[in-house]
Image (cartoon, rainbow, N blue to C red; front, side, top):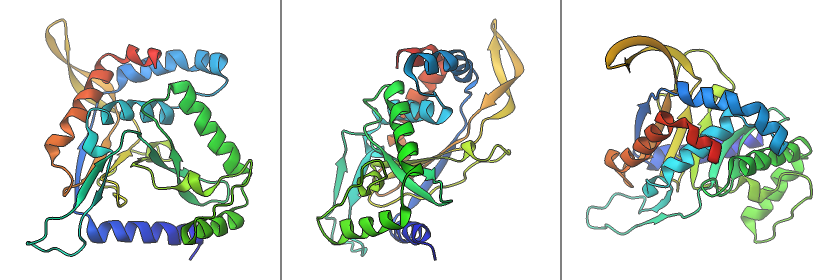
Length: 265
């Protein structure tokens, strides 16, 4: 088995064997958001020198929601064996939102790369960071990278190579966000997504789909075609209940209802 599949196999098997997953699919109307995005995309490239992609925009939108739902951006450490007499364990909320984002690499592999501090970065800074990761991925000697990752795991010695991906780019983030909508435009959606221990949450974004929705126009209900983006939210039920993700959904609803706010990001 290829090294990248072995790494994924280990992390996912560990997660599914120890984490009680709960999944919820949220289906927001993103028609207005996409209209504002399309209007600002060309000017964004001219002003900042980096493309504004839907991936980057949604990372920032999700980060805004995560800010008000801290248990979604946390690490959990509980005893592996279920013991009704032992309630020891810790839940650590992280201030920095470090997103582990699955990345399709030039060698055909898919690995999660870390997008650091998404909550405090602007859209321009996130775009620059993504372009830097992509450029270094295209220049990376992956056989050498896997060897350096093993060294980093077995010892404190980390060998960085300038201009290439390094082990720190693959360190476990505080939350995972996967956008299959960027590679598959067919109708469909995530039903569930792996929560990677010790993270408490993973979010899966599916392709935007045109659907009929009931809209209120001048006080009257009308059925109109709208752009809907299915978002699967999977979380560790040991760390939180559904009520803990409601503030996240409410914040996203605010953004989608008044999308002009993204121009200030």
